[in-house]
Length: 212
Image (tube, rainbow, N blue to C red; front, side):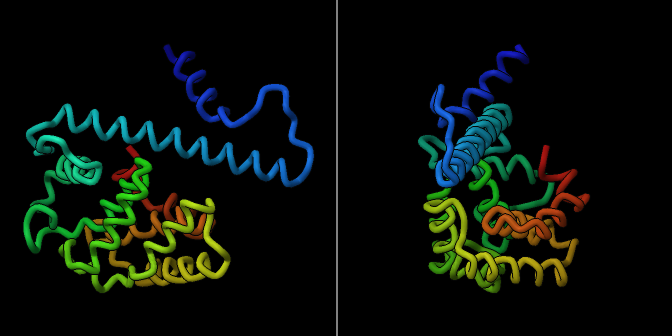
């Protein structure tokens, strides 16, 4: 039932809290807030990973997912379904539609952070097609590792990500299959910048095509 589902969400998010314990010091309160945020994020990641797998099960012919797939292969199968009307994708056909930022975003949505790091690192080895090499992603693996380990980027790295995000917002071409919008989503997650987030939330493309 809806009530049971709601209780499962509350229980999952509040799992770090100790019954009967009230944090008192600023350090304890900050630690508890960080733990609750991480718990909420993990719940959303698990929920979206379940959705991805359900979509793959419902559309096996479009997904074209082979036996014993990796989690990145699951993301790619999901993209075949999501963008089935866009044409060949880069991981299927050389010169296909560039889906690097799409793959990275959905790895984040599902909590597949190690796969996200491996995906970015593969760009340097020429394993991802498209024009990703012009995207200046050489520092992304370090940014993602820092975000995963500490829960946030340091001030200097946040500033670097924010500046690149603001540059993209000024220069982006809205006709480029949403590639830049997905990139902005990644930057918003990494640096938790309010300005980038507001641009994401106000973008009609993202509202109608990503968050469904």
